[in-house]
Length: 159
Length: 104
Image 1: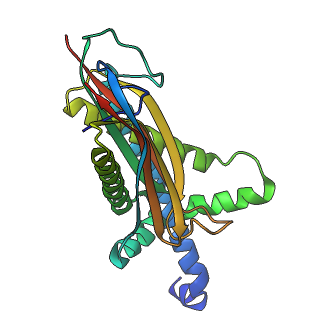
Image 2: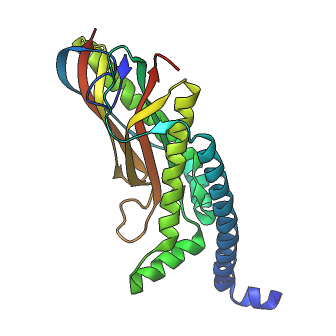
């Protein structure tokens, strides 16, 4: 066993990275989804709409901008899967779930900020995604992904 | 200073428009954070260092925009939009723009 590792150091490093990436990435993803679903249920009564909304005169006490953002990246194993996908084409499921997680997390952070500041609803939600980091300018590789959610939190006059 | 991203300030009347105001900042993170992000790239998940950095920079871009609006004589910025772009390897530009107005 040890002899094989010493004979092929490159290959064993690659395999080790794959295993570490796969196990850590999968556990982290499951845990993250569990926490997202739990917090989404807690915050479900705080309404979020992506329309501007019209308010009667005197109904609104104050309004302010809230935002939330996340930067995420995929693990070593899933990145490899995505590169393989590039050959055959089709849905890249591993990136779909990554971006979904990031976006929901960003919305949750925005809602948490709005709740701590006493808002009753959020209007005009906007979502934005961009790639940042070292590999952002390279064509083939996908770097870290930033998702941003922002909107206007509104505090009503009556509860 | 009231900041909103809708076309008006809810519950208030706009009395004067001052036109577009904007603020931007280009940031890169220091080497330590970059290396940590490289390690985190192995296992995946959230890169907290980057998240914090971008939030700080976005706040700064917003502050600059608000400052510009204040110089024009406005007390609110409406219709704010954000944009992010990577201008160089490892550096990101955060950009915020909106319309400066005066409300009652």
